[in-house]
Image (tube, rainbow, N blue to C red; front, side, top):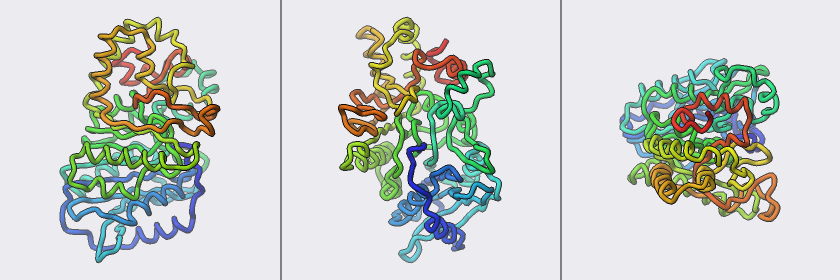
Length: 408
């Protein structure tokens, strides 16, 4: 979720949630077969009210069986001062939803921090040995971009002489005492102490080739949106039941994608009918990168001269760093054999996808500040020909670029 998460913080709801979460109850004795962790990072970043709604939704009609564990890391205070955060287990007891606080993290612990992410995951595994672990990360997101670049790109391009090694990518956001904290995607990946079965991003612009490649060894599957995510976020009311069902993991994740899409596709307003979502098999990211590297090398001149205005965008306003990967490749003048090899690799990587016909468009004829979706491949990528020197320098530090040589 990014600044698109415009719902105001609901202070009364937050107060009720915190009081309930601190109430102590005996933990269920059965060790879980599956663990689902909702990492809710909304400390003073404008998302507190929406994230509190999400937690109420996921716990309100909870259907997790005893052999599954629903855990919530909650840091959703509206205060800009240091506040405590909690690791909570939610479950049913005597027909009622119970939220049992397992760990209280001291004030000053930053949720938009790789160190905290690692600690929460370690606490999760230590307390709940399981066969399957899933992480839903809910906060702001700006894809692969450096910290603060999304909102102030011109300043960064003007400071191009600064070393790219000092730049931080932006996942999550937290503000405390006037200081903003965000997580580098490389640090985010390194902080994951064991291989997860899936990662779901309820955060904007995370469905990119760059993000998928960075996380390729950290989880089996990734669920993310190439475009932004509107204020309501994922389908939290049905998510717990879907993820705890007896279906295969791939089927469960596909159902989560479909339910998310259905929420927005059914909206009456054109602007609110805005959703993109993809399920990515991270084990296939390396093969996709190999095919892309061959194409980028053979068609570099066309890549540098492509008319970016004709390529499917996933950005609003003029935040022009997210384009459809398939549409890029299809406009490079590839041979039929090259396209066939690319699409075979791509289809093994992006195994499920859904998109509405437009995104934040008041009308299809005049979509600005949104866009019409004429081509939906399901994975975004940076286009250097419409980027910047500073961003190019930074981009060279990413695993996707090491694998594909998109930026030389």
